[in-house]
Length: 178
Image (cartoon, rainbow, N blue to C red; front, side, top):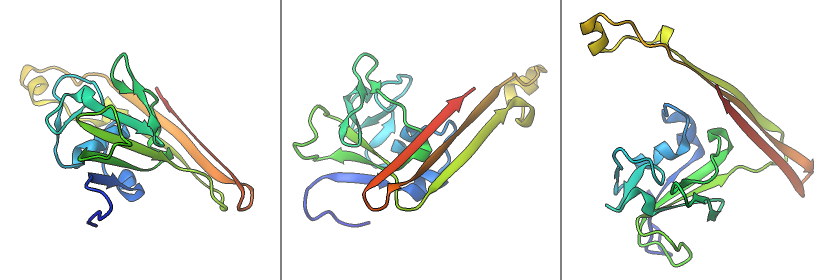
């Protein structure tokens, strides 16, 4: 871990390797906020990113997308959902953040998206969860109940590359859930 000698901000950066390798049940990048310090499960509420930072309410977290506000002020959650494969990295600022990050008393979650490069690159994926491949719960087994039916298909792609070498790039990523 590197010490930040420029500011007093305490933060955790989740890089591309961690995004790819750490398990997430629904591929929601905001579920990885939990790996930072001073973060606890917010409980039954689903406001903010779903976690309480520095003992504040879940809704006291400011969510940024490429440095711009990404807040749904009505539900106090993220305004725009971003596919996991389109994220370069994200940071969780938990304490002593500078004046450039206003609005939040709890913490800041800043998601940085990927961009195109001089080489064509991309991914295609499908994640499938079905009840036929899952085990029954202890309670269902005790009462002789069958496994409940559940099907979830989450699939998408990301692709990026050059339009004009060293000058103009393109990147696209889309995800569907059925």
